[in-house]
Length: 323
Image 1: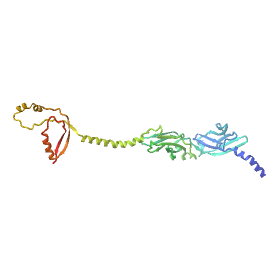
Image 2 (image 1 turned 180 degrees about the horizontal axis):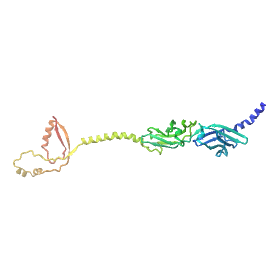
Image 3 (image 1 turned 60 degrees about the vertical axis):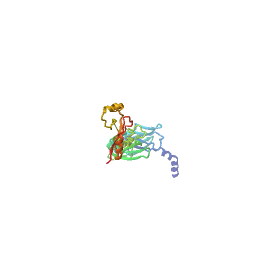
Image 4 (image 1 turned 90 degrees about the horizontal axis):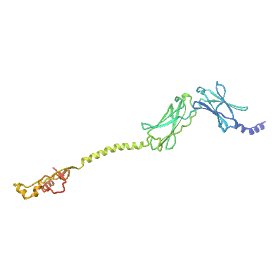
């Protein structure tokens, strides 16, 4: 008898292991139940699938999933209140029937958040926003982001969170962020997280970057505020100490006492012409303050008496005698 059992197992055990299905069911996005029986590979036969919640009549599947023309799963609708009831499944092929009970309370698999967007805020922070496809009071989220394709950094958020902030980002870096969600404790916590959303990107070499020159502007702004007053002070100083031009007519000063002016004029017509006022002199640069010693002052005074109208160097320094 033992030899017969051993021979039977050797001949048919492997076959039975292959054809015995294992049904796995999850609730997708709190909208429908998805059951599959191809975890061990594509079945060799097509099964008929029946399912029902507790206190409900058995229902045949109307929406099969298939792979290579072989049925591998079924999708069926459900009501939210039914999630907390026992779910029954049955696979039938010929005279073979396989029944299994499921607890779907913690088997909710949410779809990735929708409309994931990124915005550079007026507070100079990087803000990410998204929407849920289910009631927000029943969802909690997890975000992960990375900079310049380095390791991911994850952060689990509280319930109902629909935004995430990265403080003071650098436009020279490349930021990438994804979000996933699951049912919160208030609505019967899910055992599994949903799939990650498509990544949203911001930063270097990204056309969606709204402020690609932000960092350079931030660097040059304080430089501008420092350099502008400094340049202004330098310009004012140059104006204050710059040499100014004055028009000083050079008129010969007679040093002789002439008793008979008419006789003297007749003797020298050229001297007469020298007394005519001539105010067409070139402008002379004058330095207002030129400190000279007493001896230099006397020498300058004596030399001034010998000035003539035909001199070409008209530079004048107004002396200020030192005490």
